[in-house]
Amino acid sequence: MNKMKTWMSLLVTVASLSLMGVACSGCDPKNGGGNDPDPNGATGITLSATEMTLMVNETKQLTAVLNAEAKIKFVTWSSDNESVVSVTPDGTIAGISEGKAKITASAGSARAVCKVQVKGVKKLEPIDVTMTGEIDHETHTPGQSGSVSFNRFPASVAEFKEVREKIGKEPQGAVALEVMAMEMYRRDRNVGTECLKWCNTSTNTNACLGQLKEIFGKDVNYARPYQMAAFLEGATPDNGYKPNEPYTVTIDVRENRPYEYSKIYQANVLTFWIHCGGARSGTKRSIQVVKTAKKDEVSKDPYFVVFNCPDLYTQVEEISFKTPFEGLK
Image 1 (tube, helix red, strand yellow):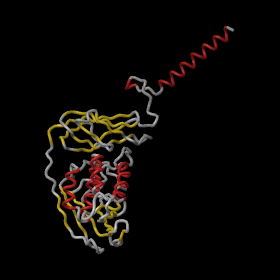
Image 2 (cartoon, helix red, strand yellow; image 1 turned 45 degrees about the horizontal axis):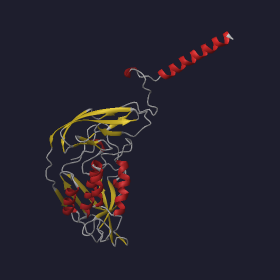
Image 3 (spheres, rainbow, N blue to C red; image 1 turned 135 degrees about the vertical axis):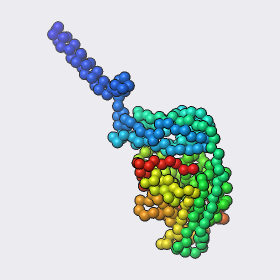
Image 4 (cartoon, rainbow, N blue to C red; image 1 turned 90 degrees about the horizontal axis):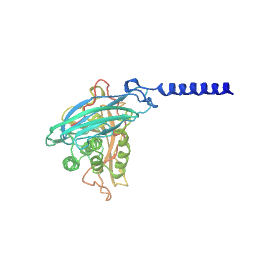
């Protein structure tokens, strides 16, 4: 009986020691032990910057790279002081007021922090927009093209509407407004959503919103914070999608797609190529616009609106690792 108790005690001791060994096998000596490795493999995040200075009204882009073995591919961004610095789901930070804040990127148990200081106020120069080229609204005429150039993106819905008054009555203006609205959505979901309503059919607005959540989302492999920069002249993956200034959006009448009459909108649907420096095949992508008097539409005749544009939110080529995206003005 005593021998049996002795053996049982030994077994309990061995089992306890084994469990201790298992529990400590994942200890991190750098953290004093006790931290199990992330079961999803997200053991480290590398940020494009760990310290940053910006001004009120200024935006900059933070990017995060997970270790290659990570199963988690979603990065969550947060600010510890949103009254000073805000951050979008794709890592775009904006100066709100002077002060300091910490921006944290999280994936599983992995964390990385960028310290941000906001100094001074960036005065926005008046937005300057020019439009060139003539495109026939009624007759399909291959060879025609049009461009819109601008010094910066609108900063508010009111400013967007002012730009719309200047360029929205021409097809190239409608396309440029779409690029503006999508970039504004990347920076501020509420502002961008409102702007998208003013330059799309209601049906296409919903289609865009469903896809933009992903293209400007948390998945580091899928997200493309530089998506709209790719539609500005001069921007390519190799130069970090840094466009020429002033920014320019250019469209060409699509030669193989005659204008088509839509019974729903009682108007011609016009199809164009929009120049794109990040297209996977060729250097252009397709987009369609329409000018309608349909009563339940937010934006109607005399303004053109976007009828269909899946090419605008289909992933552009991934940026070069050697040249990070610096954002847009």
